Amino acid sequence: MSSSESVKSLTELVQQPCPAIETSKEGKPPEPSDPPASDSQPTTPLPLSGHSALSIQELVAMSPELDTYGITKRVKEVLTDNNLGQRLFGETILGLTQGSVSDLLARPKPWHKLSLKGREPFVRMQLWLNDPNNVEKLMDMKRMEKKAYMKRRHSSVSDSQPCEPPSVGIDYSQGASPQPQHQLKKPRVVLAPEEKEALKRAYQQKPYPSPKTIEELATQLNLKTSTVINWFHNYRSRIRRELFIEEIQAGSQGQAGASDSPSARSGRIAPSSEGDSCDGVEAADVEEPGGTTVATKSQGGPAEVAAAPADQEEATQPAEKAKAQPLSSATPGQDNGEDVGQPRPPPEGLTDTPAPVPNLAAPAAGEDAATSATAATEVPGAARAGPAERSSALPSTSAPANAPARRPSSLQSLFGLPEAAGARDNPVRKKKAANLNSIIHRLEKAASREEPIEWEF
DNA sequence: TTTCAGTCAATAGG
DNA sequence: CCTATTGACTGAAA
Image (cartoon, rainbow, N blue to C red; front, top):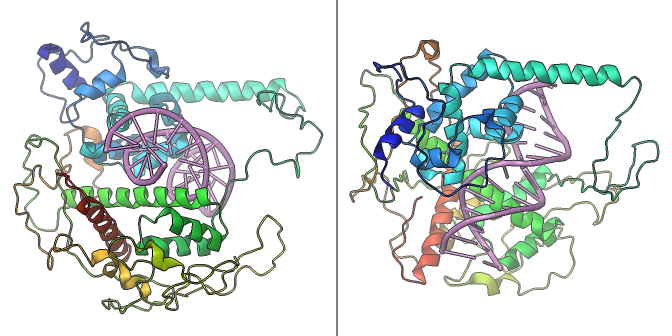
């Protein structure tokens, strides 16, 4: 362990801040000659340009701290400037599929919130950006693909998909017309907007529904339980991610005015930095179709699902909800005009129902506010911290905002100064409200055990 | 077990 | 073609 020198050179490789400054040209040693004696890796699955002796993982491990936002921004620029698609880029440079690349470029998570694995793509991107021939290489790939494509077309005259079924052998579908072919492949569930709405509402009541609640939701919405579970998982993490980007952008916001960010470029002093900023605890209000600006009443009682401080599960089904098709019964117990369910087509395929759920449009009407009420009951003062302003009292480790604003003095980036001013208001509020709920949830959870937990909200 | 972080891959829009 | 969205899956923590 040691080898501080090699680290240094590697660091340069992955560094994003201005590369200039070096008296020696160096550029990039084809291979550093100093693999930090580490056990071998499962080998990179990617062709990865095929050089570099070091595995990315090693690079990632010693990578300095990259500005993910800045990196993605530059990558996007380069790609668009050269008409390179993210599919090509993803597959050849990152080893990821197009969708993943799109996601990554659009919503990079801040470096410190990334796992080792999650950092990998960013290191690769940085490496790629540093490569003087990056564009050229990709263009070559593009040409090659095209060539291959043309070739294929040419060779196969009027042949339709020569070798299509790559299946393992479980397939006897070769018939003739790929029409209503057997759907051996699951059709991919697509939730209807109404269903999503219902789920979101449920999420706001309870970001972490109990299995029982999930089961109920599934029944009421006529979805598979696993679908509901997955939905919650996905929704939670996607909400979380949006909060991250918000965090990032906040850091690079340069409000009109002269002062640019103080840029307190400091190191990571934190043993496990957790900068968080909760932002004012605003009451929540939710949007709704119609433009009814719901004021945030401190709820009246439509808390429903959650009742007992401890485990509210029991209050959930005093009645009987045998029948599916909850036209309006929704959650038993304290109904309050709440309705989680919505009429939907009969179970099991059968596309009959001509009318796609007529009502359900704006069922809610106000109870969303329950957002906070719900669980707050027990938690002492922990959760909400007064009004707003939370000038961190503790020496919160790590600066709340890193300053990715600066740009290297490269000719390229001279042109881009897209700076986007935020102009969002509504959706954000909602997200925050939901986020609060999850915070509460965690507090509750933690309340039952004693452990110095560190939270990041 | 459950949650989470990363991804994949189908698919909806352009 | 290309990109964005999103349900589902995988593997690793807890």
